[in-house]
Length: 160
Image (tube, rainbow, N blue to C red; front, side):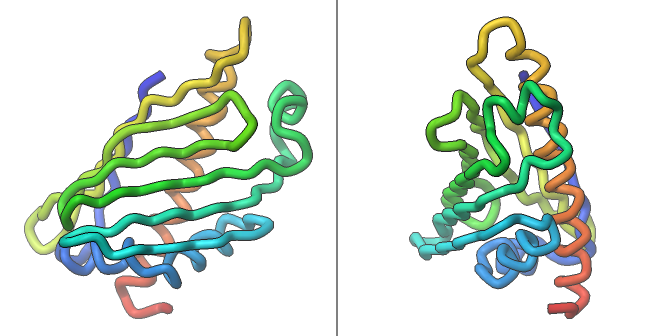
């Protein structure tokens, strides 16, 4: 299934890009999302960077069908490869699980602010219930982005 979301930040693209490339920001987002653990690596790459965020997430509150696949916790690995400050690719995997999300991320100047746009193809390869689980995965990505946006808005105002 396709998942798309746009977020608005009251800062220029260069500041939003710098925030996204900061491992401390990514760890702060993980803490706000109540992840069990998070390991963040950011590697500069030309004008861009590669981010790997390896997280263990609690599955409390997930429907029984999802917990049956995920267990009490699940590992999520987010890999972002930013070619430059305006765009990159995103891959979210759960090692050993039949789930994956891949797509693109873009930063676009919008007056004095920035629009962050994420477009993903979310796939779950489980017969009969794939659609329901893809919707659940997309909802979890959406909830995570809502938290990330709140942390990012505060971060850009100096709350670090």
